[in-house]
Length: 116
Image (cartoon, rainbow, N blue to C red; front, top):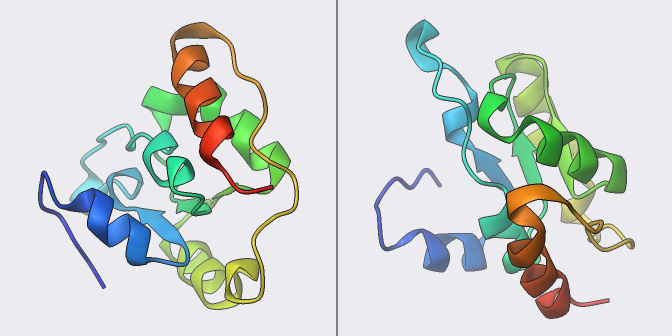
């Protein structure tokens, strides 16, 4: 499913097994900078993203190291990741890491809600 409606994303994310951050794809060559991966993580959903996560670069790197986020180089790699993501079998075992900077408070709340 593709969803892009403000105010409804929480319900769509909750229904998903894995979330693709569409704003990370630079559609038509237009850089957007990605979308906040903490929203799906708050609901315990792993995240796949395309090459453009400039607005969340540090967060993207840390989450990729835990297995909760996969940063794909291009659209072909992203769709292959969708088809083969371990979310179809099980969620990553490790919770997202402790974070610094402006996301620290949000990350603490998210970690408290993620299942072990």
